[in-house]
Length: 160
Image 1 (cartoon, helix red, strand yellow):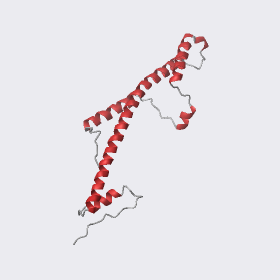
Image 2: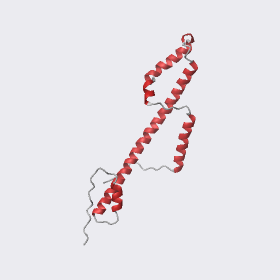
Image 3: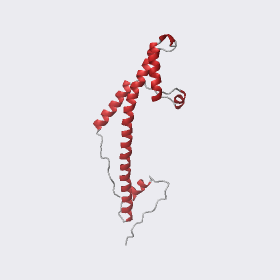
């Protein structure tokens, strides 16, 4: 089996510390972030790209026509909501791009590590079959990863 290593990277402890500090700084600068339940998400109005134009026009018209703005609608809060949405949208776009790269790189590095582990596992099985001593404990521990499968007893070369 020829393993092609498509990614060769490591993350230093200093980089990890900087990344964790940066993430903590983001959380600190967005103390108002909330978590909605699935039920909450289902019940609330959702604004997407199509709705954004409607909301922007409504805001502009409301500022220009204060006489028809309902008393319960506070223009300053409307403005804050729009500003917050726009800024969070910018942040979200950047975070989504970063998360996609992180996820893809994690998948690839995990795939390569798993492939390397399987290659080693198969090498252990081959070595045991060839009569190498002292590897059964390693084989037994690694074979626990495949619990539902019947374990083929490695053939041990007869000793004369």
